[in-house]
Length: 250
Image 1 (tube, rainbow, N blue to C red):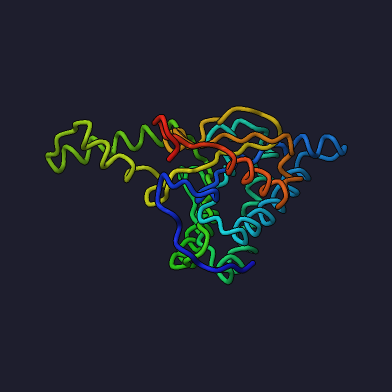
Image 2: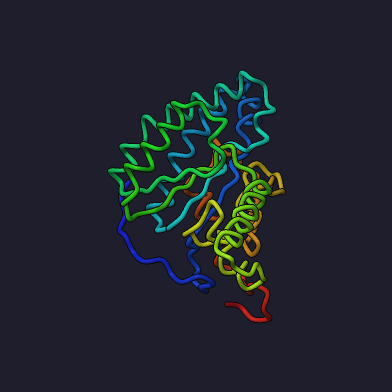
């Protein structure tokens, strides 16, 4: 996995190549069921798809790739399935961090870490620290993440900021500071929000950030998602006219 480092186009750019792609990785269970396999096998195949898509996105010149790995609602799944997902997360962080670093990838994790096991948190922190200064694609994995919770936390932080700094909590102040209090601070909003498996909902993912994202839904199950599928999504994006609320494309 190697690629050249270039500067991303500015926000609201009319570039046919998206800067930031966010993906809801869906369909692992159905992939396994269709093959008569346990759901755990679907999640293992999904982990392989993550490696494949990160490599393809980096090679294609995408600057930011954000993957919905585990939602705050996923704890409701059977204990055995949750344990398998956590096991695969450990394996991924242990086996892929060094390779991501060699490939100039920066890895970030967003979400509430308080419910994660201490060894997983340590693996996350080690990976983020090791890849912090890398200048290539930024791969963000959302773990124990919920969009509504992120917004509520940012609102609470904004209220504390205004009180501590004696700042007027007006609209202009909120517009300036609020994005800096989100977990995705420093990143441009997604240009495309994709979901695999044919489902057409955003499932509490990046609610604030995806206000103007182009939605792309594909019937392909996540374990089958390939470079060709990613290329097709980008081609579809390039055909769209982005207006960001105005009458003309931007």
